[in-house]
Length: 123
Image (tube, rainbow, N blue to C red; front, side, top):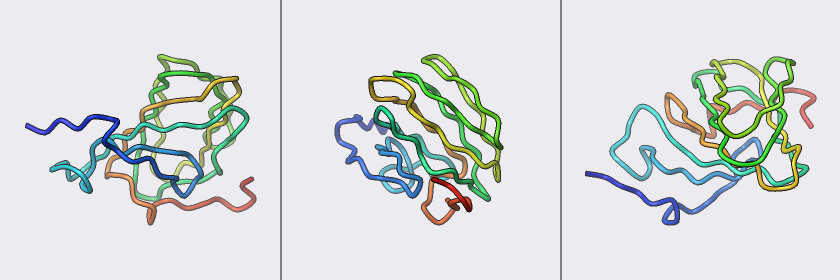
């Protein structure tokens, strides 16, 4: 049985600028085909617009509020929202609130910097 506590996972900054704790992935468990991370975006910050050629993602908002952009479409997101991001879809998320925006990010296949492409003109 593998159980990994959040506090034992060192946070790092992904290529798009979010701060994540990789909870389960091939780097720290027997999980081979997906990954689960907790992501944090501070107030007033947004990730760089990017896409993943191979990976599909699910974001699940835990705390805070934000604006999700996928392929140019914008939607407000709040705790309890689950967001589907298909492979190749350009996306970013912005913290529009006053507290940290915290969400789970599930990736299949698992997250890799090499599968993150920053889109032209992203700020």
